[in-house]
Image (tube, rainbow over all chains, first blue to last red):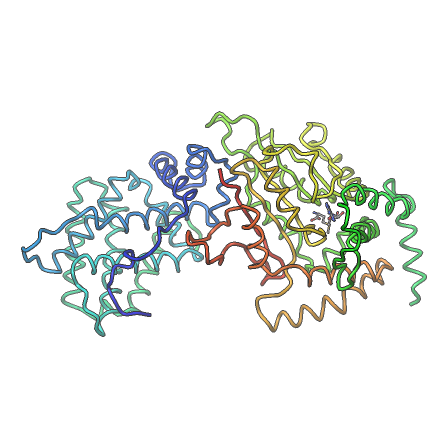
Amino acid sequence: MALSYSSPTALQPPPYREAESAILSSAIKHVPVHGFTQQALNLGAKDVGYLDISTNLFPRGAYDLVLYHLVTQRLALKHRIQFPEGQSIGVGRKVKSLILERLRANIDTGVLPRYQEALGLMSLAENIPSSLRELGLLSDEIWYLAGDTSVDSSWYTKRASLSGVYAATEVFQTTVDQSSDLKDTEEFLDRRLEEVRVVGSAVGGFGQWVGFQAGAFVNLARSKGVRI
Amino acid sequence: MSAAVPRAAKRLRLAPSRSWVCSECRRSFASSVRQRQQQPGQEDKTTHFGFETISESMKASKVAGVFSSVASNYDAMNDFMSLGIHRLWKDHFVRSLNPGVQYASVHDQQEGQRILDIAGGSGDIAIRMLDHATNINKDNKTHVTVSDINPDMLAEGRKRLSATSYQADGRVDYLEANAEDLSAVQSGSIDLYTVAFGIRNFTHKDKALREAFRVLKPGGVFACLEFAPQLSNPLFNAVYKRWSFSAIPLIGQIVAADRDSYQYLVESIERFPSQPEFAQMIKEAGFLIPGQKPDGTSIEGGWEDLSMGIAAIHKGVKPL
Ligand SMILES: C[S@@+](CC[C@H](N)C(=O)[O-])C[C@H]1O[C@@H](n2cnc3c(N)ncnc32)[C@H](O)[C@@H]1O
C-alpha cells in the first residue's frame, strides 16, 4: 500500500454510474422521512423513472444508501471549507474544522435524525470492512486537506487515530448532540483530540483502536436492537 | 441388485401420472418447434450436449428428452446436485430479488409486477415469488407467467400451482415457449425475468439473453440462478467434482434407471461459462451489472456465489 496522503479522490473516476447516481441522489432525499431503508431506495428509483425492482442494482440494499452518503460527503468536503491563503493556521486546528464540517454535512443533508440506522448498518459484520475502508479514506482526505502530506512511519498511527477520533465523535453527535450548532459535539471532539495529543500512540495504536471501535459499535448496535 | 427392479419402479411411478406423454410424441414436438425456428444454412452446425458434440438441431430434442425423463423426479436430481440445498438457494434467490410492490399505496403504482419465470416448469420459483410478494410486501396484484419449453414440466408446475389460491386469483398463467424465441411476449412488458437452473440447457444463451432484454421494461431486472462450473476453493472443487461426476450418474441410474440423463446434467454444468464470463455475456446483452464500477472493468461482485460457488446468482438491470 502506498504511504501517502495524496487526496484519494483527486484522480479517481466518478464513483457511481449514471443510473446509480440518479437513483441514490433521489433516494437520499427520502431518508429524513423514511430512514436509511429499502423504501427510501424504492422511492428514489421511482422518482427518476426506474421501478421498485430496479433497486436490485444495489446488492447491499439500504447499506448502499449509507455508503453513498459517506462517499459523496467525503468528496464534498473539499468544497465545504476553504482555508484562507497566506495565514498560518496550524494543522491541528484545520483537522478540527474539517471534522466539524464533515459532521455538519450530516445536519445539512437532513439525515442526522436517522443516522443511528446508518451506524447500525455500518456495524453489521458483512459491512464492517467497507465501513472501515471508507473511514480510512475520510481520514486520508482530512489529513490531505489540512495540509499534512508528510509520508513517514507515523502514517498508520495518524490515520488510525484520526479515524478513531472521527468515529467516536460521530457516534456522540448521533446519539447525544442533535443540536444544529454542534456545541457539545465540539467540546467532545476537543477532549478526544487532546487525548490523542497527550497519550499519542498509546491511543492511536491500530490494534487498540480497532478493539475500541469494535466495542463501541457493538454496544451501539445492541442498544439499537441489532442482535450481535 | 439388477437394473430391472428400479426400471419397473419407474414405470409404476410414471404410468398413473396424468401428464405422461409417450416419449416419441415429445421428441417430435420438440423437433417441430426446432424446425420452425431454424434458419436456412444452419442444418449442419454442431453444439454441445454435455460432453457429446451433436448437431444443433438435435440438442433441443435431446434436452427435451432429458427433462421429460426426469420431470417426475427432478427434485431428487436437484437434491443430488446441490447436496440438498437447492431449496435454500431458491429461497435466498427470491428473497434477494424482493418481488412485489412494497407499500403499494404510497405511490400510484397499483398494478403489481409482471414476472416471467423462464424454464420454470416445476413452479418452484413462481410459488416462492407469489408468496414473497403477498406475505412480505402485502402485494396481491403481482402476476407470474410460468414458461417452459417442455409441456410435461409445465404440466407439473400447473399441478402444483393449482393447489394454491394464486391460480383461482388469476395471478399465474402458463406459456409453452423456447427461451430463445419469446415472440408471444410483448417487448417492454416485464418487470422481472427469472431463470433458475435452466439457462445452461439453452442452445444459444446469447439469444436467450437478448430476448430477456427485449421483453423487460426499462428498469426491469434479469435474474439467473445456476450451478457454476468451478467452486472457488480448489480443494473443495476437486472433492465436489468427484462427487458429481462419479456418484450422481450412478445414483441417477439407481433411483431413476436413467444414467444418461443425469450424466448430461453433470456435464452441462461443467460446460457452463464461469461467473466472470457469464457476467460479461449479461453485460453484452445491454444490462447494467450490480456492483460494477463506472470504468466498467471490474465485475467483481457482479454475481453472488452460493455455498462456496456450487451455484451463483447473476443479475442485470435494463437501463432507462
Ligand atoms: C432443471 S429444470 C429447472 C426447473 C425450475 N426452474 C427449478 O428451478 O426447479 C430445467 C428446465 O429448463 C427447461 N428448458 C430447457 N431448455 C429450454 C429452452 N430452450 N427454453 C425454455 N425452457 C427450457 C426444461 O424443460 C426444464 O423444465
